[in-house]
Length: 178
Image (cartoon, rainbow, N blue to C red; front, side):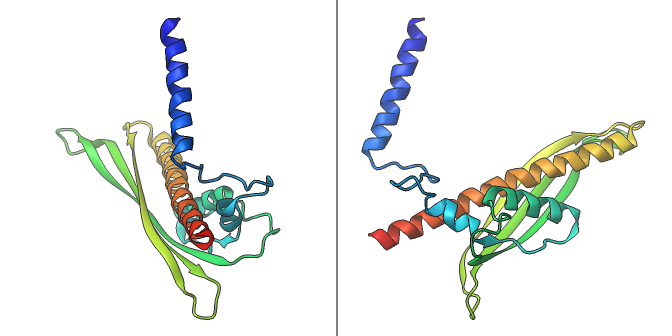
């Protein structure tokens, strides 16, 4: 009982200290309650088609995080993304059959303004890794599991990209104010 009470006070004190040093959440709304700069700018990002099935999954995940599919905000940016998922056998039997595959997803992106020069504003990269067990008699189950892992990797990388862009948009908004 005593430890849970002291943990609560520690958490409350930590949050108060963060507020005192100027900490503000990335997605914090404005004082009037309207969407903050990160939300507004992310909604104005267009994600062009990314080739192949993993690219389609990545594009959908990014659109979900940006909220840009509503069509209510005029698009001001294009986010060009290159995404791939590679696999490597890590659990190898004596007969050279892999029983576990490590999937590594990598993405690079560049954000361009929709101006005549197509100015590159920022760029970056994200990476995620996961693994899948492979069983001899369950080929289709393994194939479905690889597809599910690919989706999880794409969603993880989409979250990383969205957060990196939100931080960048927030920094740009802070520079305009200062």
